[in-house]
Image 1 (cartoon, helix red, strand yellow):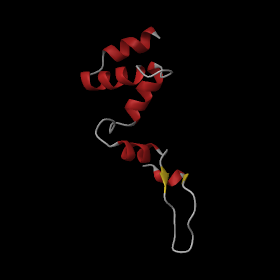
Image 2: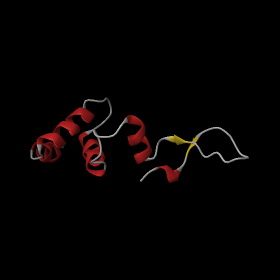
Image 3: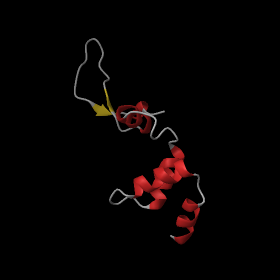
Image 4: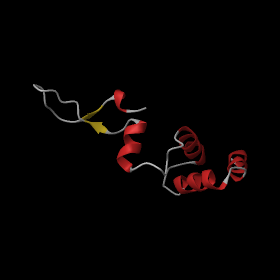
Length: 79
């Protein structure tokens, strides 16, 4: 844990700020925050709908002309 905290302190300010904001959320450890911020550099620049679609947790419409139904989360929604 000390190594992770030392690496966080070595980061630039914007990256460190994002990690600190994420770790302020209950049950988000520094390791998860570092992974999330490093894998999604768009964090903080996209809307909540855009970021949820990017990481693949948005329920997207998959209707066709003849088929309509409830919304589910698909694997094709992310980047």
